[in-house]
Image (cartoon, rainbow, N blue to C red; front, side):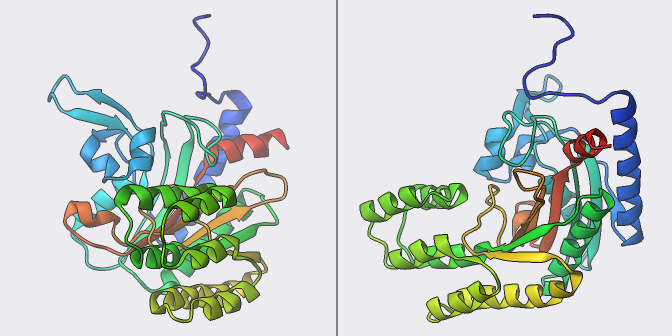
Length: 321
């Protein structure tokens, strides 16, 4: 192996690519600042307990090592959102707080969202408001971000993990089986779901099967409202999506409803969303609501936000001239 070679999944930017990235970073931060989102520069490493927040999916992606100074286990951040939760909890604020960041992260393995193990995560997060208006605000900011990056047109996918969580609450499943069922939905594997339902006695098995297939236009919400009419929590989640859809309709953005969408990170609790473009084979940005993430720090604060890999999008934009 040559000394100049980088590890698999680790890359760098030089010359024009680095300048193009820096230009986009500055423009994004100017945009976020104009919307009242304050810049946060988070530490590269923290105590593992603060980074993971009992999230298995984050745990699997986090590099860990023993700190020779303290003798405690440290981790290199694989996701900045838990760090923002700690910062917000530490602030002690009871009002609305807005944060933004552009920072490198490191993951033990690449996934379906990030193009490499060393992405540069850009994002914005809003704490202190449980109202739908907060979700609409961050989604609009996401759309503005992609427009600034000259990624048009955008297809926005809307879902709500509260639907799955509400159905799951009616079932008597162990934590292991609940996690297995969640992963099946993350993978969107209908054969695996059929096998799981045949091996487990679920009270609402047919509802889970239907949920996996609930994807399409606005009419999906009406179909779901009829299908889950006996589940008040599910109807509330559907109503939230209805309100968001109506408010975003004026943005001239194509919107699809995907009620079976679950995020890879377990901390999402409500509305979730992804942005797509026809020139890319995967989601370009993702986000959603996570109202209980800060509980590990002694405070429960409603929150919503989004993130994307700015390095990947900058490199793509630069390659297209």
